[in-house]
Image (spheres, rainbow, N blue to C red):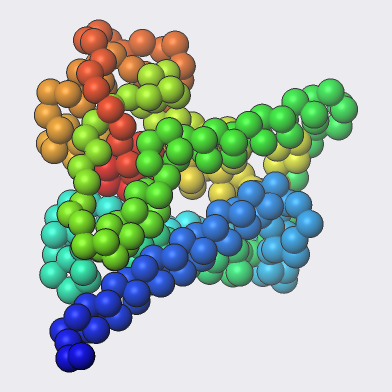
Length: 274
């Protein structure tokens, strides 16, 4: 029996690609699960309300703003089509998405680790029924985030489908564009879920408020940039969807109305560019 070095090299390369994709996904799961307890202040030592103590308000404000800015820059720049075209000259296309997910997760872990305490209380809700309502909205927001990823393609969104396609040696499957379930109510249900989860709290500290304002500003700007890319890529089909489905608030109709055509998207806000 003859040994084919080329075949062995290809098999090893495919194993490494899958291992990298799975490892990146596991890091994402850690970052995502910690995000829930970080924002909710649940059972962990570092939260949005209680990070590293001892910094003055001004120092904490600068450091926390830089951490939010680092996430925003990484998340947006690496998601742009022009960057992807340049990036995949050095990174194999099969692991491009996994690399994006890994770096985004590592930046989040850095934010959790280095977040400074800003303890001043902006508001506090003590009425039991109101607290239950806010915690319910908090949980519903995170549930919406997770559900929205599966309403598009969770495994493609986080790079697993791409690495397993490379393992099989099959070409990438284009999912096209279609609107499903929550995506028929709003164009960005994933981002809506984040906004609800970030703002629904019975106790709003200055640190939490900074986090909520910073992430809200980023989301609103990122949606505009992402939708510009989607119109350029998908043309009339996405423009019709944009004209008929509200961006974030269900029932708030756009200025113009056109019928919705077709299918799902696969980025962090429901678009193909993360």
